[in-house]
Image (tube, rainbow, N blue to C red; front, side, top):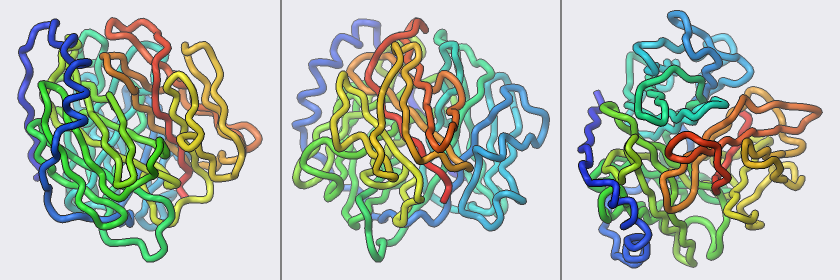
Length: 369
């Protein structure tokens, strides 16, 4: 069993004010070496959208929003069991094995967040545990999207670039891979802050997409991308995590980066996918559409509407991650819709108290094939 632990932070509320001052120092800090590299060929992956917050046993969620790398996913579906208030286990068939990462995104018009609690191999399958919470930190039932992916080897004909990291609360890398075969690594900053270094990936300017998710089985935790510094030699990303009291908090987390790749990182991308970063503007190379069409952002922020023309192909999924230096968080306000080939993602972001707020975010959409 893949055992995961975390240490709860007891720092007072004033600790949030230290985050801004610590980010600059963290970005400049040296990064220690990590373990052997793994590059981005997705050997095993699966995704699903739990469309029923109180599912009966062995529930099969929306078939048009689930798929995976196993044989015949349409006839061998993902199943979900609820194991407690706000707690679920997602059973991905026939993709069991070590390593990999998982992401989760709450789908709710009211303030919710969902996180990963654990993932482990059970028989031939991979079980991913998802916990969901109210702004107070109380467990709460919720619908959500979930993604598991594991990669190894170097792609024979790489397109774009891709990497991921799973770090424990101390900054020790538990698993990682990098599509150029380099070694990703993590350094620990102050409470609730880490710097991830993904060498050889992306571009010298902002290009691509990021997703981050807390991994904590003990209590509610939210992780986001606090800062992003691209360079000619790779990508530096600061990950910030908070507990339900909105205090910086040391927990395990996952981070993935994709440039001209889908969110699950295939070396040969599906024909239909896209992503977008809103940071007050829409940086050109962070808004990508595999059809060549132009993505757009609309809405008031309650929710935002991300429109991706000409890529709507079920089965499909989406993930959202907040960006910035304070405890706001983001998810999906409602399931994405598909109309005449166009996908619309409804992105909802919330203040720590659960009020709708207009804050920066990353959004990623992909079809299965």
